[in-house]
Length: 243
Image 1 (tube, rainbow, N blue to C red):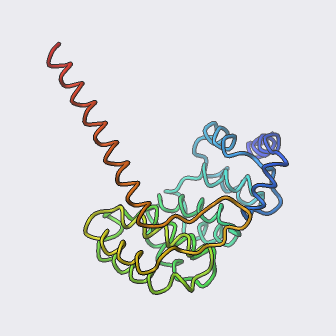
Image 2 (tube, helix red, strand yellow; image 1 turned 30 degrees about the vertical axis):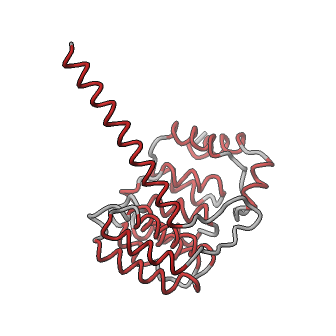
């Protein structure tokens, strides 16, 4: 049995009718097995990085196989041709964010985002903006001026963009706001003027977070974790000094 056949058999065995119902509500379409994210994680961990297998899984057209492909693909090996081909198959936000997350790790992350963010189509634009959300805090990809320009664009366009693009743009505002003080005030001012971002999540429990409260909670959590790490480091240093 080939590696692809073995993997597809594992996916099929792990699928459930209940998960298929859930994923359908989130926009996924047949064919799919309905594999839980927990089981997908177990299978992906076993497979490790396997770019050749990822390509075969994606070409199968099966939703679960494509989600798995995005987990085992090698971001550094993603060519422009393959990225564009995979993008053409994206028809729901699960795959859009999965592909965006993978390409955010690629050396071509900025190029992909610049190419797709302004697309009038929902899924290419969603992938392009999700790449920004994943990379906004990386100074080697985005300068502060780049991010300020994106905030201005989002404030001007978000109300008129397709449904899921609005969600990703909202996520970009959060990601930019978390980068540093130099851009946070601009984000918070824009968020105040915009108000809540309205996104139709269908028959799901998903919500699009309000920008300012989310940024505040995340910064507080980061401060708490930093204090905890500092306390542990001080404790280790004191123990070493007493030894």
